[in-house]
Image (cartoon, rainbow, N blue to C red; front, top):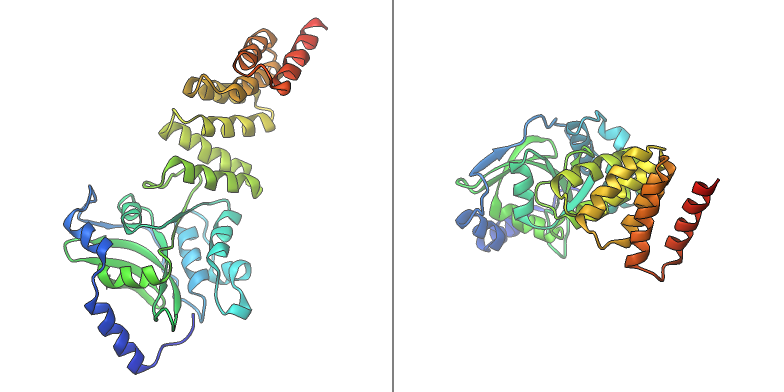
Length: 311
């Protein structure tokens, strides 16, 4: 990213950083909330950043760790914005998803450290300057030590940069508390709620990676079996590829998670009918109608199933 700030300003910055409290870092050090004292993520490669390529280098390291070996030059062709001499955060997310990876933003230090403890590297966005003199920078967090008050980064030309958590929190806060977990689609983030993972999975589906999205939905049903939305997403994708038995299984999971979800009963009926089980399908759609008698779509499903049975 942009060049180094002047010596005087750098000295002022160092003084300011060392003199200010960092509330999240302090709280974590005093009350780690179940975090292990230290953690290091294994298998994260190091790519020394080419000029202004901190974004591409960081994303390339995360993608390679996730099982997709790629160079920072290849990533730069997809995400680097030449007239900005850098990479937008939205393009980092889009670049990860373009490769069929689950990309989930994080905005709390506890979440960043929790992902590291789970063995997941995390891309972090920092402002190494000041609010009125920014120097934007991406790095990859690969470990921490709470007793020492440290976080460990792959950053710039340093394979293992050690920063105090206090200093890191300040630079990260000035970057907007933005971080990104980039994971294989069947591996869920450790600290993110189901709704956020669902949003990331749907983005994969919408972006032309249905198989990756299906892998995420399947992983979600294992972690959150009582959340019907992941079952619905999985069922829809299985139905789209003609796996009617798999779709029916997923929609059954949805109605078991929420027996009052009329749409899930209707989808189950469609999957059963397409899979050659019209009697079970008719019973399912009639349950949907009982739950929502005004829904014309359900009545249409019932009519189509009844007509197929009469042939």
